[in-house]
Length: 628
Image (tube, rainbow, N blue to C red):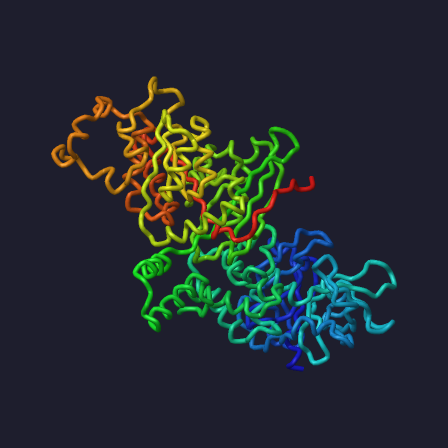
């Protein structure tokens, strides 16, 4: 009977089992049937095509079976040493195995004394998987051929001959006619290439065919299956499975079988098409692009937009949206050395938790290193990652930019990602979030923000600093000293809606200056210096009047480290819009790290507090210690 010619008998060492032809050269069977395939020859015989004789085969794929009766992945793919002129098996949708009324399932096996094969009739008890792996089978009738040794690897078929699974084991209890089979979707999980052959309700055949052709076309090595999966399922799709995916094939199979949204498969295939250069995929526009289009449309129809609005649109079009990876640290309440660390990723305006752990301070770095790498997989492939540390105030000077990426990667985090910090109390303040949003609306015009300087040894009263920052509508403040050396001034900077604070983690130690510095000695007007004028070259005394000739002698001396830092900072950010500062500071850190004497480079210990609440649209909430 030619229609059944794809049934196969497998012989390997002392094992005899069954299998079924799925392509002209490949046969599917159980891994335990060919467990000795590394030492003994594997031969395949097709009882309905005896003229083919014994065909040699080798194991080319394995489902990861560990050798135990209840270990998952009892799947092996054999490759024949030549093509065979037989029609391969056909497949039914996976749910056909247990649709009511339960269909009769037929298995073709080779128990002792039946080299030509014999049939057993069974049915699935339910669609419920046993341990996420097997469907349970019971005898169709109380008599007839039981499933015994020799049926392992047999196809379980519907009465019309279509395959719905593979028999793997039988009950060892005498007189109990039960067995187990791997349904098609589980088989495809262990060997993803099978997904191309199995009908999948809800998925278009042409999309599946194209997807598997793309998977065979050697996608670029930097094509991350985890990011591709997250991009396909969207903000409300199933989260990335624990451990992620090691191959694109595994990610594609998971989307095909485990994700209920059929459109996810279209997006997965479309994005992969883009990456391999096979043509553009049709993807929904990002919210930023939609906003830009709306602005352009309004301009063309009304023609009344101001120059400033046009500039806003231009900057929005030029600047890609940030995709934050947030590391939030807070005191756990379990002891002075215990903190709670939560790592999450933002995508499409939604926060995706990656991990939460209560740790001693000494364990934070290694935990964060692992979790940041996991979090990046949740980001949109087209978005630019922004690592954000949300820290208690006393941690703001922590050298997080110098932490290594991982045990096997010594790259500093600050040289691998745009990396910023922000104050936890500020991050949770509704007042400051609201005021910072309004401030960013002004800064989005794309013009550089002048550096409002807070000098070392400053005698400026904190309320005066607050007024100066408010009156100057400050977008950027630079501190010559670290937070611990100017605590009151620094807290003013945190509680006034200044989106960007910059300082050197080392700077000038407190008390280095024996006398107050003159306000005119390199400090600009009242501590304010316009970066577009700070480094405009030597000034002509005749052009500046007698006030220049009357400068204190301290002006000619070498500036202190804090003043020198602010001078360098003002020059470095003079032409950089605040929205671009995370990327620009990354470049400065890479330059400092590559210097001949990195420790002497002015940007070596540069710390950037950058706070745009629009990147974190969800309301902040208190961290809770996870249940141990």
